[in-house]
Image 1 (cartoon, rainbow, N blue to C red):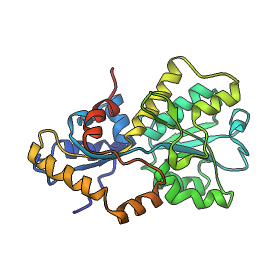
Image 2: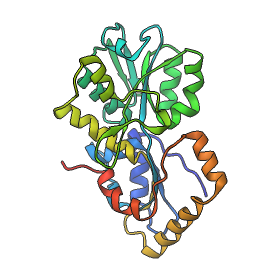
Image 3: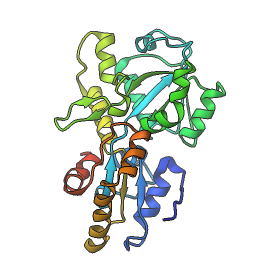
Image 4: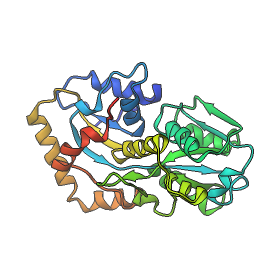
Length: 273
């Protein structure tokens, strides 16, 4: 296996590359929430259609938004704090959109929004360099790269996107069960349950994170190749070492594969216009 990182275009360049690759089973896309969000919003330059790319594996991966402790001591302080400077890739990226629509729902203010960072690694550097004081991260990235800073009180988690359960309700990501969802924070601040179009957009964003990480192949990949790869994934799910390692990275995150994935995936990565 050769891992090729293809950054840029809010993850659209890598997605387009695999969309146009030969469907011979030798190239696959390890996609993330940014690819799913681009697939839903269809900004200029996005050619791939995830719902037409057969999947072999997926897992949920919510987002966590975090701040400097001197600005926010507890999540509800976001409504009164001054000088909030948020930085991320762009407003149509998964994390960017997650922040924009959470802000719209909750009703807090920001001093500045800084777009154009190359990804979460760059925004982490900007956060610790004090260029920005608020940003977001996948739960996987948060647990693997930032949890230690929480323990040292160098950053504080404020809210998470959440995931969608089978009933279409927003629930906390099991790998970040101690962080409020944006809908829970809304209820805590406004003393009522969120509803209306902006609430539905936040649910849609949670939905895009329910299949926030996965592996898909180019459209037209032959059934016999897919069968080989899907059987390999099923065997991987019996490997104690894989299960142990994955649980360390993202505790409690589900493994979605087989018939469940084939049935639910198309609606999980797309949305009606």
